[in-house]
Amino acid sequence: MVDKQWLVLATRNRGKTKEIRESLKDFPVDIKNLDDFGPIPEIEEDGTTFDENAFKKASFTARILGIPAMGDDSGLKVAALNGAPGVYSARYAGENASDQENNTKLLREMEGVEDRSAAFICLISIAVPCGIALTYEGGCEGMISTTPAGKNGFGYDPVFYYPSLGKTFAQLSSEEKNLISHRGRALAEVKQEFDKVLTWIRRHL
Ligand code: ITT
Image (cartoon, rainbow, N blue to C red; front, side, top):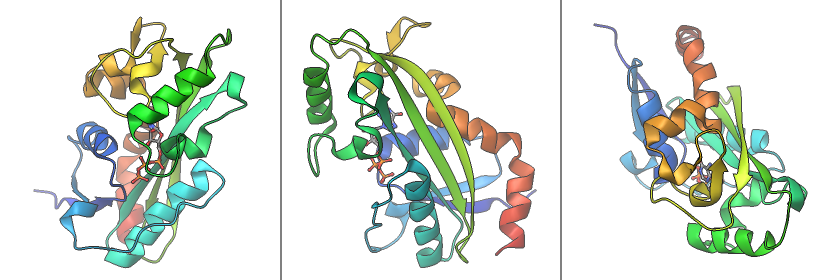
């Protein structure tokens, strides 16, 4: 039997954790998350790009815990809002804002706006304890709905409408969402070269 590689998810977001675990369930990797370890210092997300923040989350966590880590920095870019909320998606309605507060603010900003096109972006960084990392990216285009719909997922899922399925992301199961979402697409890139990723990790441990 092949030994599973430990990989810690550098996130406290349960929705992301669920989707990443689901996506990698058939791969030889034992996925931990930050809750499996004692308290560790907060990761500073002060980068100006998704790329920078994903790298910060992964490399900081890998260095602190001494275990390979995966960071996900993601968010929603709305064309009519000049790309907002972007890297500030988690705190659009303020520091520690709830998903519902963020959605309410977004729908308010979008009241009466005709161009409702938007895209989710996800940057995945896989880092080893010495601090270096591999990066993967995925995106998904959709529209901002006028009212929330659906109970699944997290974040902006209830207001992100995916036209070709005629549903919001919150109306999809995590398996269905992973097939088309920004995170699912970034993870598909990881999975496509999973053997190489494992070799790279082991070479740098
Ligand atoms: P960690 O930093 O602990 O991973 P976070 O929620 O703060 O968790 P981000 O800084 O990457 O993560 O912010 C991402 C925000 O973008 C997230 O809180 C959601 O509001 C939104 N988002 C990202 N991916 C999403 C998805 O698949 N569905 C809905 N909203 C999403």
